[in-house]
Structures are given as C-alpha cells and as structure tokens.
Length: 459
Image (cartoon, rainbow, N blue to C red; front, side, top):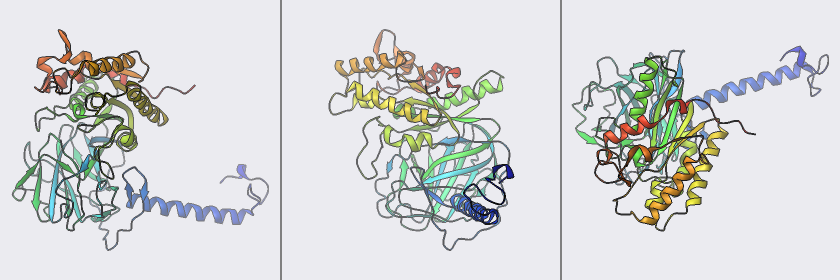
C-alpha cells in the first residue's frame, strides 16, 4: 500500500485505522501465500479446478534437480484422456510400473508432467514417478545419467482423486527436441479404471513391481500401444514462446501412420516450425501438442460417467484452453459427426458447434485456425447425402464464416480426378485416414503465418 492510496490521514479507504488496515493486509498476504503453496502442492480436477488434497504421510526430500529460472513453459507433448481402459475396472495397474514413451517436438532445460485420474472411480496413489531420456528408439532403457525422480509438492507420493489430475514439480533435465522421453509411474494399490489413450501409435512398457528408477529395460517385458495416466509433458524452453494446440479425431490422432515413427501431421508441423526458426524465417516460435482422439465428434460423446471419448464441446476447456501457454488452436473435427451419426447429421448443428469452440477460444485470447473436412469416399458409411453435407460444411468454412483462418485439408488430400476420395498415395488404405505421406502433406498445407496473432478484437 502507498500513501497515495490513503483516503485520509491515519485511515484506509474504508475508514479503518491504518494500523489495523496494515494488520489486515498482512494477514491477507499470508493467507494468499499459504493458499498458493497449497495449490502448487495440490491436485486439480481434470477440468482444471484445483482440489486441495493433503499428502498424508509424505516426505519432503531436497530436490537436487531444482529447475532453472529462465525460459518459457510450453507444451512439449500432450494427449487427451480418452476412456477408461477395459479390464482395469478393479485392480487398475496396482503393483506395476507404467513406462510411457513420448516424443518431444521442442527442447528444454526443465520438465514437469501431468497425470490424470479422470476415469478412475477411486483415488489413484502414485508412490514413485520418474522421467528420463530414452536410450534409443524402441527400448524401455534410459540414457545414462538422465534418470530423475519426480516429486509433487516436494513429495514422491501423490494421491489423485477420482476425476482429478496432478502436475508434478519441475525438475532440471536437458531434453533435446525430437527426443523420446520415458515417464514412469508406480502405484501399489488398486485404483479402479485406468485413464488411458488407446491409439498412441507409440510403444510403451510395463514392469512388475516398482521399477521407476530402473535404467535398464530388463524388467519391462510387457509392451503396450497405450498411454496410461500421463497427459502432458511441459518443458521450460528457449526454443518456443508458446504452444499451438491441435484438437481433432483419428486423423489428428495419427491413425494409420507408421508405429513409433512420429508421423502424425502435428509431428510434421512441429518440424516445419522448428526448421523455420532455425533458418531465421519470420515464423511463430511455437511448440505443437496433439489433442486428437480417434472417433471424436464435435457434438456427441460416448457412454459412461464421465463419458468415454468426450465430445469436442465437452473437452475443449480441458484439452485446449488448459494446455500450457496455449496461443493458437487448430481444429480438425467434423468427419465423424457427418459419417458416423445414426441419422444424417444436421449441418447447422455441426457449424454451430464449431462456432461455439471458436467463441470459447476467443474468450481466452486464442486465435483459431480451422480445417475443412477431408474426403471419405469409398468408406462403408459413405452416401451421396453425407458427401453433400461435407461439401456444405466446407463451403461455410472456406467462406470464412466459422474460423479466423482456414487450412484446406480437403483440397490438400483429395484425388483431383475424384474429389470424393483421398488421393491414392495419401490414403493409408481405408479410404478415410491419410498415409504417412498424406500426413506430411497436411502439415505442408498449413500457412505458418496463419498461426500468428491473437484472437480478433471484439467490437
């Protein structure tokens, strides 16, 4: 408080004596500091709401890997919690170490992770978690001297309530761009359904017992195509100034791309942005994170509570607006609303849903780049009526009546001789999902300048 803010000599603006006012302010400041510390050590609901959960019985060891203080926190990798894993309803992953393998599109000097228990029906207790660089492609082994133990509010132990999520403390670790990173968690107790992402296009690993600190791959005898619990890896980076968030369906998820090759269109886009920055071109310095879920729709969710495969409208707050330092969102949704609805989808409802997402992004200052709906001619659900609807939705998008900027994925991928279909060399073989070459073409179709800027000013 300064004297220039005093309402009169010896009194606060409310007429409270200055001494008492200062005492009150000191108490408020102390409360804010205490609450801030509790938030940092606490966990959050998976919609971003903070939940204050005491870490009973936890220890608070000195963190030898204290984070550096310079750089910008950005998303280096992320995925969306998609569903409750079948077969884990009772035991979860009790007594096993889950070693998720994730690929970074940007480098950094410190790291933190987010774990989700969105689909759990009881608290998830993680007693140990670690992060390390992979010793190579296709292995659970860690690179020498890269293993770090992760903490949560200073403790190696965290309890995540059903429906909640927790962010770790930052730990110092040098992570280069294009690295495979190992994030390992161990839970000793049954926690019910496991929150997972089924179509990772990446091999991860499981071991019996607490093997979170293992640097060798010997105990990790089980391979898995899933990501479990882990939903984000953030890095303190000098390479990026913000995060571009892609939300979509299986086409964004990378379905049909080569396993363990990181050939999703978002991976190719991250490489383009990095190359442009290294070449000194005037391109946005953004990392790229992928919030695609196979089968996702704008309007309709799956079954369950919470629903499996939550609609774009439901998950947008968490999966896009909740991403670290998000600056721009690329929306690639709509094909499943048209192709897989029990009845022919309503064009206006699809467009209204997309515009609702745009409004939510604008309210947070994010620019929105939207994609046209790609061809699906030759698929089992194809009809002339669905093709007409696809064309009508795309016409609205191209006319600029939905998004701030447009990327024409339809034009980039379609067969010039039969625009209802994907071009043959861009087709993975199912008439719906692109090949590796098709995903690369999608990234090339994005005008990097379109990613610049913020949400348009409201009039």
